[in-house]
Length: 245
Ligand code: SF4
Ligand code: SF4
Image 1 (tube, rainbow, N blue to C red):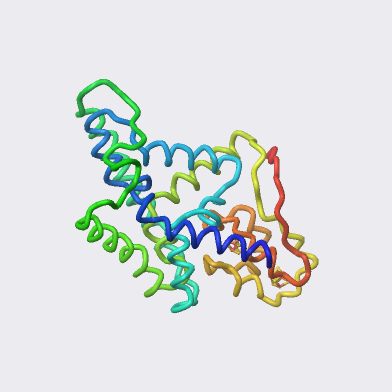
Image 2: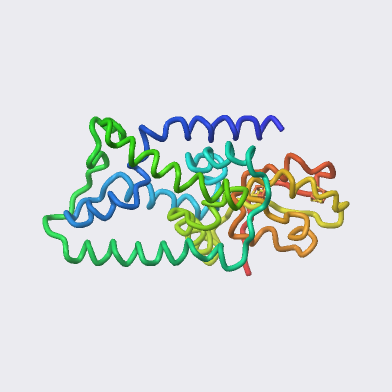
C-alpha cells in the first residue's frame, strides 16, 4: 500500500510538471526536427523509453508518465474497465503511420544530423507562451476524454503513441533473453476474490490472467504493482525473470 501511495504521488507530480515537460513527449516536434535532421528531446526520450522497456517493460507507464497521472485522477470519475480487444490495436495503427511519417520526413529533410535536446523550447521549458496553453489543454482533452468516456486509462489502451515503443522494446528484450521485470503469479494460492481486478489502474482482468497463467505476457500490464499490493494471499510478486524459451 505504501508503494502505491508513493507511485501515485510520483505520477501525480509528473502530471503537474506536464506544462514544463510536454514537448519532450511531443509526436509533432519529432517530425519537425526530423525535417531539419535534428534529434530533439522527444526523439531522445522515446529512444530511452524503448531501451528501458527491454529491462523493465512498461514501468514508465505505471510510475512516471504524466498522461498516466492525469488518467488516474480521472478514474475517480469513471472507474469502469475499458473494453479491450480490437480497440487496443488502434494505438499501433497510429504509431505505424507516425513512424512512416518520421522516416519519410527525415529522408526528405536537409542539413547535417545534429542533437538538440532543447529544440523549440525556451530555456528547456515547454509552455512559455499564452497561445501554447491552447495546445496544452487540447492535449489534456485528447488524453482525458477516452478515460472519461471509456474507463480506466482509456488513452493508454487506445491512442497512446508511446506505449508501442515499450511493448516492442519488452518483446525484443524477451527475444534477446534479457532479464526483465515481471509480475509473477502463484495461481495455486489464488482464491478468486478479484481484489486485484478492482485495484488494477488499467482495468485488466488480473484474476483471469492468473488462472490462465498469462499475466506475465500481458502487453497492457504497466507493472504498477497495484495487484501485488492488493492481493490478500500474496499470489503476485515482482520478479526479474530471465526467460530461456
Ligand atoms: S487478489 Fe490475489 S487472491 Fe484475489 S483474485 Fe487476485 S490474485 Fe487471486
Ligand atoms: S496487472 Fe497488476 S501490475 Fe499490471 S497494470 Fe494491472 S495492477 Fe498494475
